[in-house]
Image 1 (cartoon, rainbow, N blue to C red):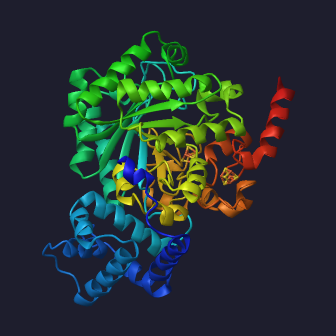
Image 2: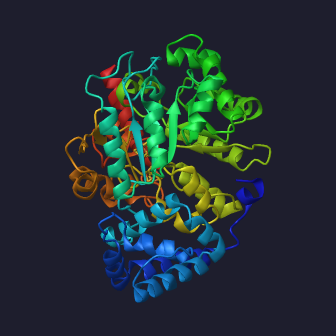
Image 3: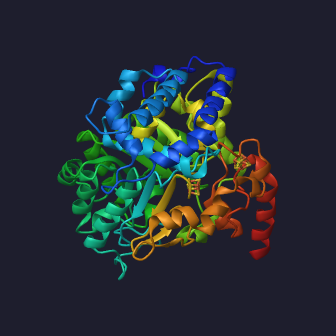
Length: 493
Ligand code: SF4
Ligand code: SF4
């Protein structure tokens, strides 16, 4: 993303944007389009949908499709492209990539099944974060996975992992992000990452970075891993204290440098708490100046896993709001080349406020892969109510080392296990997911004008109140819940 594009205002007025949203609803959400979408979402014996075939034909491939179906879909595609000021040739080029087609098919199938919803529910998780192993060489204070030196005895085997990747592919999952524990601790990590890559997934990984030597960075690149996110919780002293191992900071910094040297798209991830909040402005400068990653992502603290033992470290709503404004000011700073993002869904609100006043990019959700984010560049304002902040159980899900499926890595509520349950059944019929998707019923957030583009962090609502439909107490608009919580915690002390 270059500076000019970041500062651009998409050349559209608000009424243009409303018209765009209405156009999406009119063209894709009406009963006739939906019936058509349902029909063309059916899969043939090779698992391919008619939508996919139409998209391939549209790019110029020789594919057999019913002429009338093709004509109607071509009309819809071109009408929408016109509304979004997108160039037909550019889109045809993009559609040649299987991963882009898979993304579009996933969204259209989602509309066929769920209708146009704000925010949109996709037909299958767009992204699966796969906690590949419980094994880790560090012992971080805020680890959500409670990882340790040993792998869990019931982790998925290599064969099972491959079978699950095939299931993801069949269902239209677009991206897989390997996490952990430390994914590099598992011997078959590169075999599985390569397998996912060979099946046209966008593959990324989150790691503590300490094992990434120059040779490992090369292997990461060769395995087709397109994005590596390395955790760094501030300067050396803070990081080593958090991570529980002396020297972890130095090795993680080496890991970042080794990935950047291999020209791998690299992100620095920092969980921000009261313990490192003060050093963040200087730390951001350091990361930009010395490490040159593509992205800096500020993780919201979630009281889950070992994080439960340190809830006193959470930021107050005001601290979070100020932090998000600082991050956004860096995102649009022409002297900053890295994209500065946050997993706090309220970042969508911060960016919308800036966007409406001064222009600038809109960060509509954090659980989206980089390729999709690039494609959406410049159209995010119109699409924000569909992308909608928190993606848990709607755009994204998390897979545990033993095959258990969760709505988000930070929500320890089991939806099923992929050793025996089908992802499709869980995604379509889970009562837990139904709850997560009913934003009108959320406490606090349900009455908020920003519920469509934010929704609050469901993991924080669950972590603090044990209620997936509870309020996210980390938001200035939910201040009363924060005050209540503070009182309760004080009573416990
Ligand atoms: S009240 Fe909830 S939905 Fe509204 S901005 Fe705050 S966290 Fe987001
Ligand atoms: S619950 Fe939602 S906002 Fe919170 S970390 Fe998960 S996806 Fe992000």
